[in-house]
Length: 113
Length: 113
Image 1 (spheres, each protein chain N blue to C red):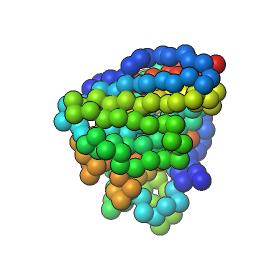
Image 2 (cartoon, each protein chain N blue to C red; image 1 turned 30 degrees about the vertical axis):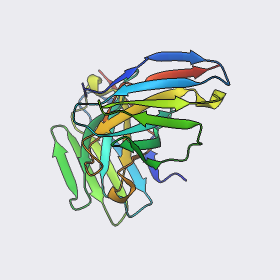
Image 3 (spheres, one colour; image 1 turned 90 degrees about the vertical axis):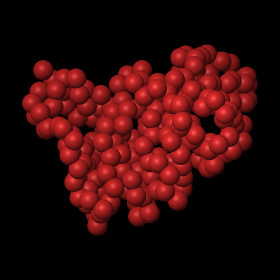
């Protein structure tokens, strides 16, 4: 059962553009929604995370938008740079399950110079 | 860098063999989780250890087992290897089961032939 669905599978943007990646979840018990960035040959690195009591969180060029009623959340990368080219994963967890992460399928982002 | 290390980096095994992968968590992190990441997919939760006891398991058979040691190191053991076990194996550590932020190591790439 895929509890977190991520789209698009791949994304190509120009330098300076906005990258948007979307995720939808099924389990309303989830209470923590992180985004991870993964470069080839590396482990996932925590980028930014949000709890469902807020609708938006911004850290530098990265923003999470959260819509609890729609059970959706998205990552916006402003002023995308070639160095942002990586695979991005959304995830969700809930405290009562020991905070095990359920990941989306991933989005391969390419930022062209 | 997350301070989480894994060894070895790469490993090639034959079907039916057994393998042990190792992880060293950040000092003070008493919770470690293991994930399996097949090529082109998001990580899948295998199990979690808290204070040297298994504290949650995903949908993986008993031939996947683990150990956690007092010095913040841990092991993932896989018996009777199958071809489908070929994947990147990631460990992630955090302060305790109540903390949400998980920090991943670089992973061990296992190839089963």
